[in-house]
Image (cartoon, rainbow, N blue to C red; front, side, top):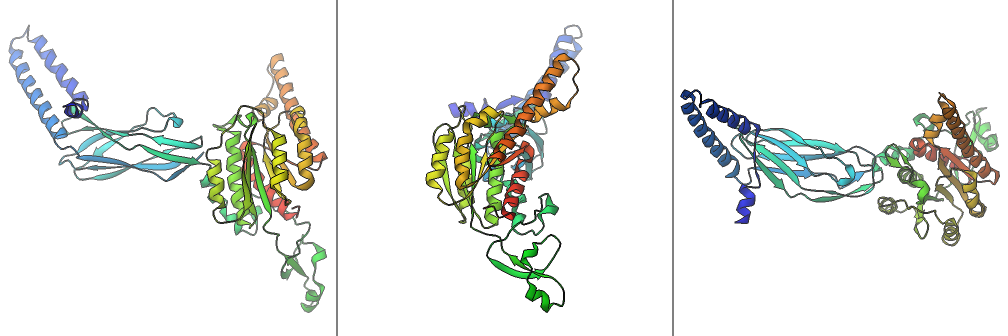
Length: 449
């Protein structure tokens, strides 16, 4: 009994035509008190109205599965990118159906007005594409699909719910990773947005003899091969060293909670880590990952096996910031005990003052004695805009001076790190990925690891 009530009552709604027709009938009955000749017309209309509603109800509800709608989505979504999904609707009614579809989107998207509408002809199957733009990593739960159906009469509306609860994982931006896959094949990265760096040394692995070009190291000229060519300078070309360990180290502390254009600094660090790991693996280096906070850490040993990217991806998609200061003493101990081979360590963190750097500098100095440490931190673009703007009054002038002071502090942090032989990269969040990949290519070109 309850199922019948749910099917025929809770799914029953009235369309705009229903209320318009009913309003006309009521008005005729009211006016018929003064003009009795209209009373008969009103009675006829109420009978037509009742018959129309009954017919419309029968058309919509007698065929239980006349319209079907299902969601088609990728197995995983890419954070910070436009992801394409679609609903597939099919009409088995013998008449055209006007529909409105509401898909219960995940709460992380904060979308409350999502709706797709259209008309399905008899027997038609239609694809309804739409896109979502997630700005958080993690598990996204899609709910049911609700369809509101109307026949050509348009008096009655049938609500049909399709149980389509689905959990989809949102990973760091793997769509951007595909844009960087060409790095394994290009010979001139400078033409594609990456800096071309002159190599200041060479490895011991001989690759080939080729013609000399401007900028090559003259110490590598092969004089015997040059003599055989009749004057054309020939040079020994050496292959880049491979199988070097590259670790991305991500600070999950409160300093990475700062938002920028809808994403946190941690999100930008995660995206850069994913892409840099892919580039390192394409260059036949070993990629690894360390994430740490106020206690504990996650450690993925550097490797160049085929499943390494999946391991890194699975570790990154649920990564969240904490609200306490990270424990750099624990990080120092972890690196000392778990990474015996000299490696490139790229630390994603943030410092706002020299005092905050000073507390961690002893750990950085100890780490840099054995490993090549690159500290990556972020410019405050809001402060930069404030410092570059004009001061309208005394209060604005004070704010401008304070903003310039904090900007200067960032530059002093870079100098302080360089003073102790530690690499530093100060960048804006939106350019983080390109700048970090550039820095990695520079370090590889200079044979620093």
